[in-house]
Amino acid sequence: MEQLTSVLPVHTIRKDFPILDTCVYFDNAATSQKPVEVINSISNFYKNTNANVHRSIHRLGEKATAKYEDARERVRNFINARSVQEIIFTSGTTDSINLVASAFAEKFINEGDSILVTELEHHSNLVPWQLIASRKKATLCFVPLRDDLSYDTEALEKLPWHTIKIAAVSHISNVLGIENNIKSIISHAHGHDVPVLIDAAQSAGHIPIDVQAMDCDFLAFSGHKMCGPLGTGVLYGRERLLEQLPPYRGGGDMIHSVWKDKSSYAHLPCKFEAGTPNIVGAIGLGKAMNYLSRIGITAISDRIYTLSDYFYKATRDIDSIQFLETSEKTHGIFSFVHKIIHPHDLAQYLDSREIAIRAGHHCAQPLHRMLKIPASARVSLYFYNTESEIDCFRTALEEAERFFYV
Image 1: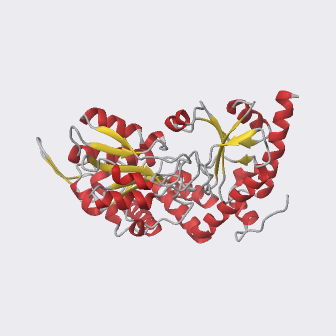
Image 2: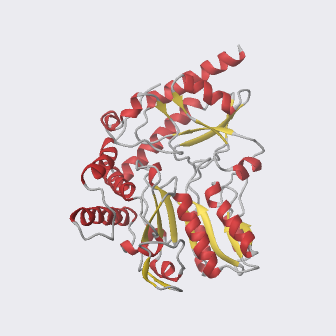
Image 3: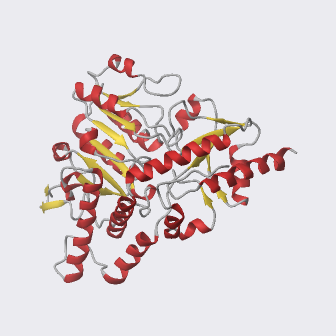
């Protein structure tokens, strides 16, 4: 197929990711690969700066604290938060959402209240709210969907807003790859004084994020899906809301003073970062954000859309596969079912051809049940992927069909 031109020097960029020489990596929605400078930042910390933060007055401790807090400032700038007090380091999107669910419920959710979610959610943005609903004797309320699985914005006003205490919705679906209409959700919710949490696991590092322009109240994302280390994540929260929430965990560094029978708590953001944090992970995440910012998030987003368009054109004539995506423009994620080959068999065959894709329910069982399928195969693209890799995928898919059924 004709190669599309890109504004990014992709083949130069790929040199920053040695692992890409080992396979065609199309499982970026699960985790992205890491550039050398992020990997080196982890090694350099342990070689030259290893110490705990916020506690020591020796030179190493002060250097470690400076690097850790510099990473927080980089996160603040990356998502345009108002202050570093609004940036909480976590272990990932799951941890961030559980933090909000637990702390918010403790303060604001009571029996008879509702929590607004959708059937499109990753389990990380559904199960925590199920647990809260069960514990608090609250109920889950679901955003109405159209046949194409987009939000039915006209039906939003009919929701029982008088009972809803918080809305929690994904920015980009990890199965469908579509950017959800979160502006409409936020507008309706704020019209009823309901705060909104956005699951940005698939959007941070892929499209520009500006929490002030977005006007969300909480935003959760994982560092490992945007070229950062595994086990890293961020919770953004409006400072006035975070101030009202009780601590999520107790331990060192989140306290101001401790007595035998009571404690007072540290100011934000330490209030929500009990114990020794993932210092080196936060530093690596800051490096990843620097790396992505040098390339340009808009350029990265454009590149992903270019690859998505190429992938669609390269595969749309294959009658044996059916995509789950709606008519909306997908952002680098393609989930599909093969009319004959089970997703797990297909993924295993492609792996034998050194092509890594995902197979299963992608931690989104309610959506798969809605679509009446037990599993699907998923290709997820990132800016370092190439059109030639997509061509390899199509060739391997045709080979798989001959292998299984000729």
